[in-house]
Structure formats: C-alpha cells, structure tokens
Amino acid sequence: MTTRSYLILHGWQNHRPEDHWQHWLADRLTELGHEVAYPQLPDPDDPDLEAWLTELARRLDGLAAGSERVVVAHSLSVLLWLHAVVRDLPGVAGIDRVLLVAPPSGSVVARYPEIEGFGFAGDALGKRFDGRALPHPTRLVAGDDDPYLPEGVQAAYGDSLGLTAELLPGAGHLDLDAGYGSWPSVLEWCLDGEAELTVRE
Image 1 (tube, rainbow, N blue to C red):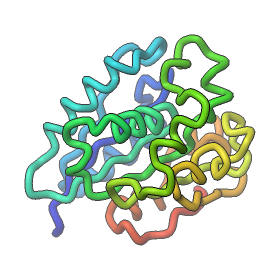
Image 2: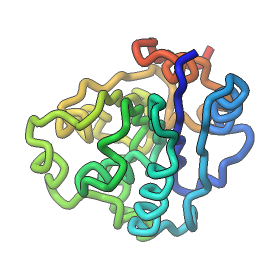
Image 3: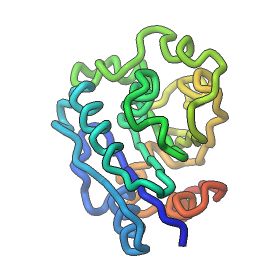
Image 4: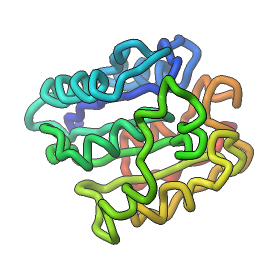
C-alpha cells in the first residue's frame, strides 16, 4: 500500500462535528492505515489569519517524511491555503496534491468582520499567480448553487488560479446543511488523485 499522510483543514465556525464529511473522511482514512491530521484550528468562530497560518506551518512540518502528502481544505481554509502558497509558507512546497473545496468568494468574506482578514484585496490573487501554475497538482470543486459563491467558483477563484473548477450540481456549500455528512468520492480521490469527484448519492 502506498504510504500517505493527509492534512484536513476545516472552515469558519467548524468545530469538527462528527457528522461532517471531513470528520467522516478522517475516520475512513485512519481505518485504512494512513496518517491523518484533522486539527481544530484556533478560535474557529473568530479566526485570525496569522494564528491559522502558524498552526498550518506546524501541521505541515508534522507530516510524515517519505509519504505522499495530501491536503484537503474546505471553505475558509481554502483561503488559508492560498495565503500559505502566496507567502511560500514552510512546508507548502513539499505537498504532493491538494483539493480545494467550496471557498467563499471575496465579496462574501468582506461582509463578515470575523473573517475579512482572509480575503485578497482587489485582484491580489490574480496578480500573484498571473497565469503561473500552483506549486502542486490542485483541484478546485464547488457546488453550482453554493450560497457563498454568488459569482461562481470559476470567476471567483478558478480564473485567477489557472484552474478549471469542477461544479457539482445541487451540492450547495458541501457542508452538513447540503447533506454532506459523508462523501464517498472524496475518499476515492484521496486514494487516487485521478478519481472523479461526484455529488453524494
């Protein structure tokens, strides 16, 4: 079996409920014998970008050497990951592949004082990448009706990052409210980076 280590990153106000697909995913991967880190990030209700970046760097440093290293980020942690890439945070370059799930758009982030610090001013994200590829194979996926992505994920992030976003019909924010207490295809992707990401049956 290929040795893999996974880092699963949650979003705003997420206290890692057992019913959430990320918790489900962490449990399934652990049962399969993989190393999994699914940390509670500091102050999830009133997060601080610098504190989250510090914790992210610590967690990246803790991923097993010699394994395939995989990051799965949901919602606000997608923005956390993009800030880490922009800053060349230690450990980012050693990641083998990344899944970015349902990032909230900049216009939504700006509405909430608790998380506005996670946003990118103006076209800062597009200017940073400007057609350059992300430093690791990355997939970007979101529901085609995500209430936190009124502009659509391609316009909000895909174009700036040079990625073609994958749209899941009727998947909302891919959270518990949308019925994502389990998500079999994300487990398949974790085990095989070429696997198709599909809606929860």
